[in-house]
Amino acid sequence: MMGKIGRRVASLSGLCMGLILVGCGPADADRERPTQAAGEYDAGTLAAIDQVESGLLPRIRAEGESGWTLAERMDRWNVEAVSVAVIEDYDIAWARAWGVADREEGTPATTETLFQAGSISKPVAATGALRMVEDGQLSLDTPINEFLTSWQLPDNEFTEDTPVTIRRLLSHTAGTTVHGFPGYAPWEPVPTVQQVLDGESPANTAAVRVDISPGSQVRYSGGGTTIVQLAMTDVSAETFPVLLRRLVLEPAGMTSSSYENPLPPGRLSDAAAGYRQDGSAVPGKRHTYPEMQAAGLWTTPSNLARFAIAMQNSLRGAPGGVLQPETAREMVTPVMGPAGLGFFVDEYDDAVYFQHGGADEGFQALLYVSRDGGYGVAVMANSDNGGAIAQEIMRAVALEYGWEGILKDPVVAIDMPAAELAAYEGRYRRDSPPEVAKVWVEDGILVTRITLRGFTSRLVPLGDDVFLFEEQGDKYRFARDSSGHVVAIESIDRPSVPGLRRIEGDQFLAPELLEEGRIDEALVALGSVGAAEQQVNWLGYQLMNLGRHEPAVAVFRWNAERHPTHANPWDSLADGYLAVADTAGAVSAYQKVLEAVEFDANADPAALEGLKTRARSQLAALGRS
Image (cartoon, rainbow, N blue to C red; front, side, top):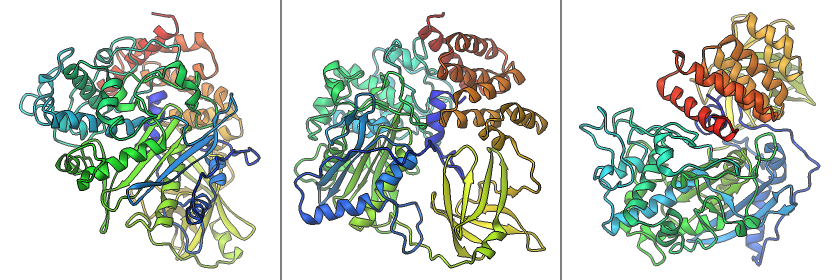
């Protein structure tokens, strides 16, 4: 399953490994990107802003490299607008916005532009839950069903001896299902929270249930946090937006923020429109999320920074906090792995950070904050590629302000003559996921380009056949055979990622044929090697991400026809039909999903249940029962 929800989850859960990068829409170097004036800042602050704006960084950089400019990376990642607020010494040091909030309206982004925060909604809402714990209305370790009056989480063999609690739900250790939510377009009916939790129409996700032992592992569950949302409203008898405004938004000074979904019409002029990886607009501009605790916050980076400062003040017992110090410390203390109560915690030798990323349809964001010392950053973008540029901005801020622990030591590049670099030239393949990396020398520099990615990156020589993949900040080694011939590329930083084998000969492989638009030949090539269902599906979504919807439909259709009793290929084909506005095709594909889920032994039951729920919801939205 890689529908609307699957594409987002793939980009956030580590599927971009090795030489794979998420979100490579075509760059548009000539696009004008308005920049908001810096405001009334002193010369030192203006210089810091300039340094950040001109020094975006990969995960690992070569010594002496100054980094990319923000304009370069907005073009590289196809990001329409990005907004940033930097925290220093428990205050907002500066805030600035670049780009276009709404391309259709021609609205420039400002520091007051509202963005969807995605999963950063979770720690903000978790703070509200902990306020209720402090007030004695909720308890972290009482079974959750004791607080739920409008719905009950079904008990089963997993909950008999180990109950589901708010502590476990907030830390993603409750064993609950449903990773994330795709939201609802403006013309789609919006379910109640109870319908979401039971997977009942018009919900477009499966029922939230416990299917592993609570407390046994960290498994990210937006479904679990939605249960906490319902408990909070059941106990308080207030709507969630009103409750969160009272408990968190107003006390933290988040005066522009709201959990209202959808936003009231009078506030839409302040809201950015969302954009996909290929730069196309999200139909209807933005989605509605009844799963407000999981994904429903509308805010600005400055407001997120105020929330972060309130948390920092809570931790040190200073005025302006929103929690008691002991509660705040519990919130940023890992329960299991890196998962705290709403935040994830990154621990380095000299520093500890609490953080969360966020992704809604067409929006991505990052909040990264020091536990001690009063510094941090909030970044928001109206793009499905926003998470990538947010990480690069965070590292630029970390370098400029001397944050501890974040940046790895630069690597030292060596000079290598073009004649020596030529030994690495060639085409290299990986089968899962299916892709081809072409490596060649250009103007004395070794570069690489990966099929269906739309960008070229420099490979920086470090010696002993090791290169830094500049775009990604990872190190790779070119492996040689016993005769010294280069035969493969292997990841050093991620050894579990399969390497790429050198292709001997000039026969084009399916990913290359798809990139050139030779669809029929590509399908023949896929059939000749017996490409697996998931591999073909992946290729279809790569085409979708590049905005090449018609070829994607052809790939999805071919895959579905090869696996007529499997539900997932039909679900993907429906996605393709929707992208080309073929309603009849989408209806037919969703009906095939419902037929296939009854006897599909290829997928696990939870995935099939999700596909069934989504198909029924989409058919209802398309006017079919």
